[in-house]
Image (cartoon, rainbow, N blue to C red; front, side, top):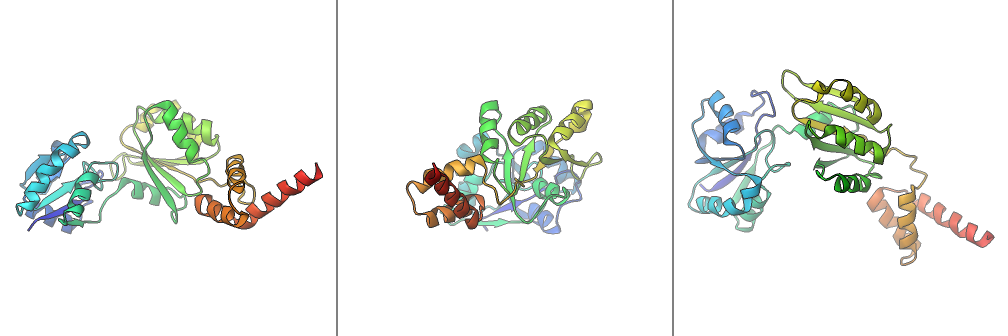
Length: 281
């Protein structure tokens, strides 16, 4: 039966896999993986013999038609990540989108995800969060992305790599300041797992004293903007002033609530204060 299964794999400890995932991996015709060498370690551990098909991000558009043809021919496929859940900062989106458009059945399985694992152990708010994946490599683009997130009240989740983490934290300091709380989680579920949180400035100093602390795969959990919710930041004030020239105050308040979670009464107060100050002048 032609089905594309989305199968999460362990992010470190090979025992972190579900019985259902193992059952699917044993029965499908092909296992589609970004790095077949890494996946083969898992398959050998569980004595699974399967046909592997390589599927990297830069070849996804080229190889998707080949996989779709296999599915149309009645074969079943399991898409796996090197570690964790497929499509989460990994290839697979275009394949799934294509299958959905062609009414090919897609069955996602629950399982390991480094972002969620790190969030749950971070001690930061988990009720609302924003997954950003990897920040841009280019410094200027990375700064712009962080500036876009400056007012974000939700907990932020990023993936990072050891050779770029210091630059990332330095850029976060330049945008967020030194006191924003950040949790660095690395080597999750492995022998050298560590989860350490501190203000960004302290965290950066902690790493610079011993760079061995950043070996392995890294997840950064960043506290959302916790500024006084009754005071508008310069950025929000500026946007409000632009909108108020084109829209009624009530609509502006609704938009600011949707975009930034700003309380309506704070918007009204800011508007009345500015109006009053103009009259006084």
